[in-house]
Image (cartoon, rainbow, N blue to C red):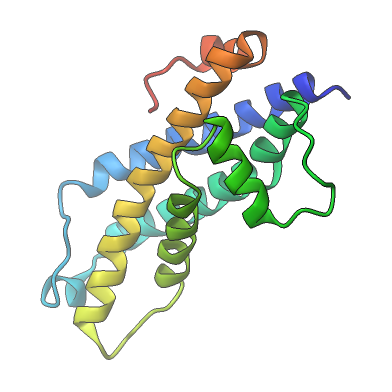
Length: 171
């Protein structure tokens, strides 16, 4: 399968994750940010929404990191070594203008890891982790938009198919 066709598939997959993540973020805005006091009273509905955000954040970041970003390098025919580390690829993508910042991607990994810990006894730490994660989810959505815009600009035939089908309203 060509890199162009693969990118169509990957962008459609990302669009689904972004759409559901955006819906969950919109619902969560009603009761965020959490504090040490409010985090002790998380409802089942809030927990469901947070779980949904974590799942879609993880899926979106994995799809972008494992599929979309490497395929951008393929599409651009960049001469990066096949055994290059992911950090080297991120730096290359930043130099190309496909990512605003390699460091931003790394910070999103930290937000993702922070939410994976429950902190049942430390309510302040738990509230802080949830709030950082939600901020990270909004940043990941913005990063997805940045990468999508880069693809539309540099590879219009690749970006247009998923944008036309899914619209730009989910970002």
